[in-house]
Image 1 (cartoon, rainbow, N blue to C red):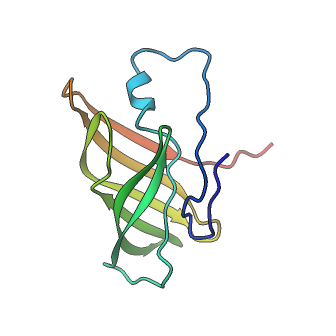
Image 2: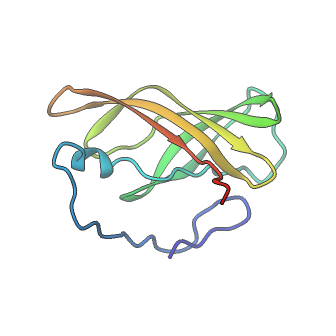
Length: 132
C-alpha cells in the first residue's frame, strides 16, 4: 500500500507486487520502471522554478530534481533530472505531463543507459481512460 499526502509526498512504505512470469529481456527494466508520480512543492511555482523531490518506480521511491516548464494544452509540464537509479543512468531529462485536476502524470518519458550492458532504452508511461 502506498500512502501519499496531497502534494504526492510518500508517507508510508511501498510494497512490491509479484508477477507470474517476467520476460528475462525486460526484467532489468522493471527494476527501474513503474508508475511515476510527480511530487509537488508546498508553494506555488512559476515556469523555471525547480526543487528536489521524490518519484516512484517499481523498486520503490527514488529522488529527482524537478523543474516546472509551464502549462501546455491544460497540462502541467515538468522535467526531472538527477534521478537516482540502481542499475541505469539517465540520459537527458525525464519529461512528465501532469493533469492538474487529478495531480497525476498522464505521460512520462525518459531514456536510460544500462551501467553494465551500455544498452540504451526508452520508456514511455501513458495513462489512458478506457470507455466500457
